[in-house]
Amino acid sequence: MTTPPTLIFGTGTLGITFPSPFETNTLLSFLSSKNITRIDTAQRYPAIHPGRSEQLLGEAEAAEKGFVIDTKIKVTPADGTRGSLKAAKIRDSLAESFEARAVEQVGSLDGGSMW
Image (cartoon, rainbow, N blue to C red):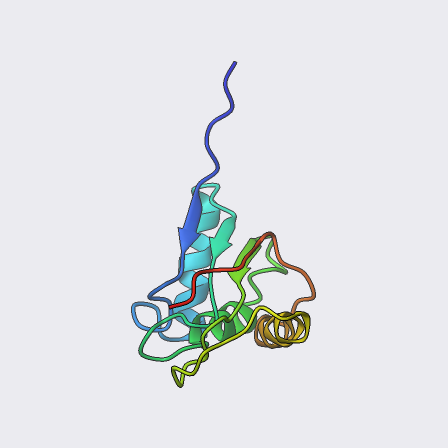
């Protein structure tokens, strides 16, 4: 018997298409009803309001509702300056993500690309 693939919901537009905690909660309820419990986010989401995706996931208490949240290291800050993958910068990036989402762990962490 084969295991079905794990579906992961991408939040690149969370904060635009679902701009409030109420609408984010509606989305989370829908995802949960479809057995989608893994979410991909980043501090750069959405592009027009970086950080809002993680903030909304925290305000909607996604982790407390059983969602596993994957994120990415903020390699390039929103101001366009060159980022870093030095240990201290990685810790800073994670601390920002944890604070925004009100959690202390991630499902997986991606180093991302230097964009």
